[in-house]
Image (cartoon, rainbow, N blue to C red; front, side):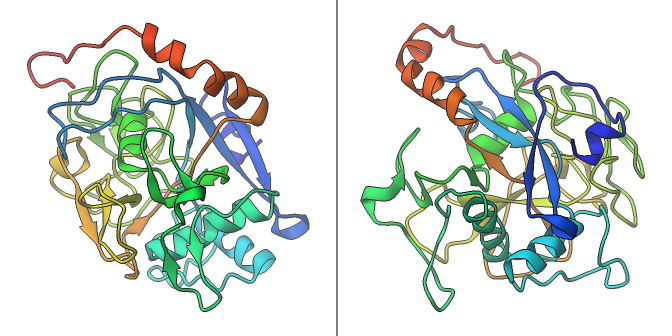
Length: 311
């Protein structure tokens, strides 16, 4: 199990630790299942609507750490650079100072090193491009950025938003399962807290309270890249990409809320921006999930939107 689980940071059913690399370069990443397929979108979110996902998927409980990047660099010769906090190049701090393209290369290595297709299309010169139609992701609509054969990927805006703000019935304003502004903290994992208004980030295993699904730091700590283009249409390789969650230095709590969406060029390294990883379920699970998806969606009850600001 990864450090967050082994240290007893929280106890959640269904948390699975996937292992990558080997020897001195081995690390694990904890994933939790994001269920309730066919949920409605949040019609008060940004963009509007957002959050509807028609399939079961998995979301990393924690942000990717600097240590994970360094180990993947060593194991896969990735050459990913980490800017910011130059004296703190290793350890469990979030991997901020990384571009979208670098995050995509890391995710590709997670796939190829474990026997799966790369999620993102880079040519021999390292230039990112769209996938051909026959290999594009099609669950929930065609996605030219993502390969349908990949197991690991950057979360789309809908996937990220659902994992952060939905509880199976309603959407909340904050990724702590509440409409109340989180208490700012330097670290820890108490319910209703988030790492913002601080001078430094927390390590990824002690970065605030959990979302209803059990993810940590989808508000605060590091801002996070979305797979999705900022306009929601993944039809051009160099479109700006969405950013969510605010960061440790954010002073205004609205910037860690469901109502805030930022964007930036995918080639820029931003000192306060990191990312997390999403995944499809294990093969034995996904066969059953996707085989009966039509029945599940057809029979799923529609969820309402809470009055008075709750989502």
